[in-house]
Length: 142
Image (cartoon, rainbow, N blue to C red; front, side, top):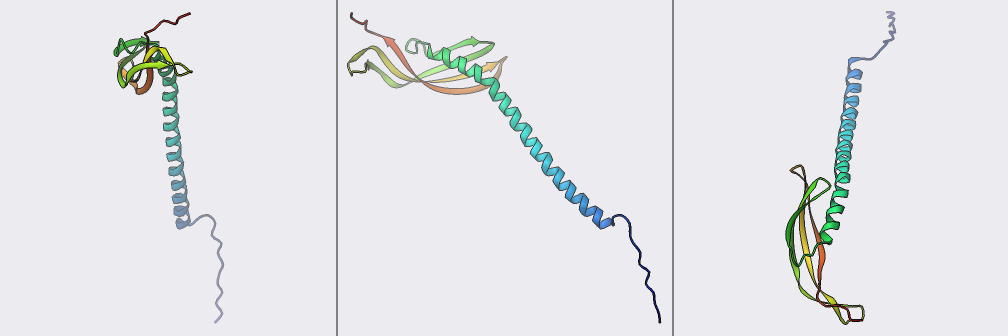
């Protein structure tokens, strides 16, 4: 018996090879899509925070300039943003001291200011800062 086997060369992919290739491609594509989505969300959040920085810095500058011993609640407009704030005395007021340790010209107290920044009625953010409030009580003698 002389059997001859005929060799056949199969051109192209088999069904199993195609399915394995599609599974690998799908997994890679899903991982890349998730990575892209995460990066886009991070970029959006960075943009939002970057937009808040000037408004927060301006509000802090104005709040530090206020006399907290005479007013402890308020609201003001700052570059189109509404800033509402409330100050709370954390440490009782006391006489200040100069560098030499002698009695200074002011009474000082430590305040915590809670403030909100609104843009067109929408909350931009809520913040807290601590500020030393002072009031001149003595006049320097020359």
